[in-house]
Length: 554
Image (tube, rainbow, N blue to C red):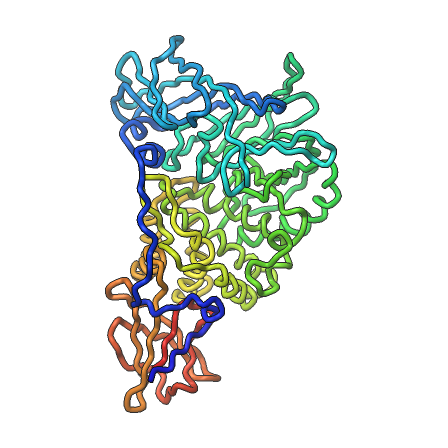
């Protein structure tokens, strides 16, 4: 009879199965042409490279109505006469103008196809302007669903924000709505009713009083920015500021909060922001957007990683709305939204995946940044315990990597399972300074770039000097976790991996009780554990603090 021993949190969750077992996987989704238009890299999108946007939008709060224009300035990457941009079908395209004339266009689902009067030559720099209007989708549960949020502050004044990750920026403004092509710079002009302010990305360049009781706020973004990061925040904001002495010099810290939150905000931001920046710069390299500054903005939803204007809605308390997602106690010692959403400035904002199928790069690294912050404040053991505690949130329900080309991400396990994966890689590298340099090098190598998940995997293979591909494949492309199976024959311990990936051979740490951990490298065939003579069922321990695996002892 086999004695099945599962070490770690999985027994508490009731989620463990031997990795070789057949799991009921969710049926593949039926994708439509609309999905491909939204998520695909078609010639009508790749034919032009976006250089600059000027989004100029007016917010009619009372009618929950928006209207305005967006200027597309681009460079042709090939000859073409027709291109695609994106705007949700509930918003009306009033006109598309090019060189003083209106261009013909057609619509299909949320895609708009524009035909030019003559061929645009490769290398040619051109521009066109889209005028649009309508009532945007109102988010019912932002930030988990996309749209605009129309709320009221404690004084009853309007409080409006955008949150559109996943569903896409074209839910509220016309854009080339895919992550592979980030605009190089941008001007965001937002006109709001008098008495209110708009806070958007970048730096405030100008405030202009307009006729009809509106005020326009012009925000200039100097760095590349992805579409879903572009934001407007409208409210009766008050502003205070600070400076952080960062790796690239003084970094401006600007805080925009509602009047009723001013006192709480000063205390909460002072306690969290500078320690967060110090920790994340240490591990990931300089904050990526010194030119555009760092902002926290009161939001009528929980939060979002809007580049250089992080939306904050954690109610000025530590934890995740006062709770610890890890269950360890460490998560109650700092403000989750400040640390997590700011971590996205490195992963998601500076480094952006070309396809949302690879969103594990955004969420896995950013969730891991929480543990690195814990480590910076309370020591390495605390950070490891925090990561171990994150496992309680893992479902192992589907692959972390999603289907490509249809604007669909993978399992939400990309957060906590992704964090555990990175901690295992750190353990395998077995040199903390080398690991830190790998993380900093990743930020430097792909600074302000769009990437594929495979590029990130290749980077770690090169930088670590090890082939980690099978490890990435198992944790990213399969729902199951691998199982380390150990058995004893003739007083000799043997081990093998049971995994989905052929030839899986992840190094793992074992020890005899009271001893030092030793690396072994099991394969998918039973082999003797020669590094630990004298091992028995009673004294053999597997490092399940740092390894998220199943363990089966016979």
